[in-house]
Length: 195
Image (tube, rainbow, N blue to C red; front, side):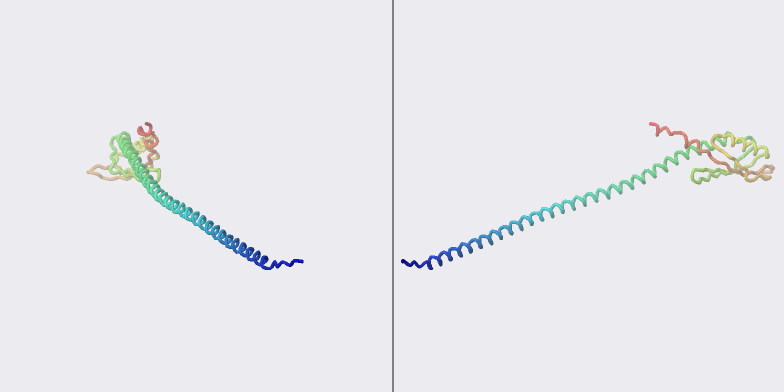
């Protein structure tokens, strides 16, 4: 029988197997490093992209905040302008009321009755007029009150006091009364609102 020594052959096979395992291990480690590096680069690029988006959003938010502040400022200016407009409209309405009041007083004042003072007091929507003056008799004061009550611009004349007084050597009745304006001028539509 022939004897063959297979030890060197087995040793070479083991070495070849070890070399293959080492090469495969190195390749696996290299592949693992490449994969880890690729994942790291991908994640970094995604983070950079998201940071750029966040910076863009912050910039746009800052622009919008500026626009919102400007809009608030414009709204405040608009409210102030509307308030001024309302005041001017009220003054326009009041100007015509004074004209109507003086016209009505001139038309309603009976002969022998003289006004010495006229004072207006406005509280909310109610305007009260205080009249003081002189009349040749008490009957003329009552005629004045009836005449004022018949006016469409004035209502509720109330006598505060009446007493005798001597003015310029004449004996007259001094009176004081108040009445309420009915604001007919404010209830009429204005011509500029209709157009």
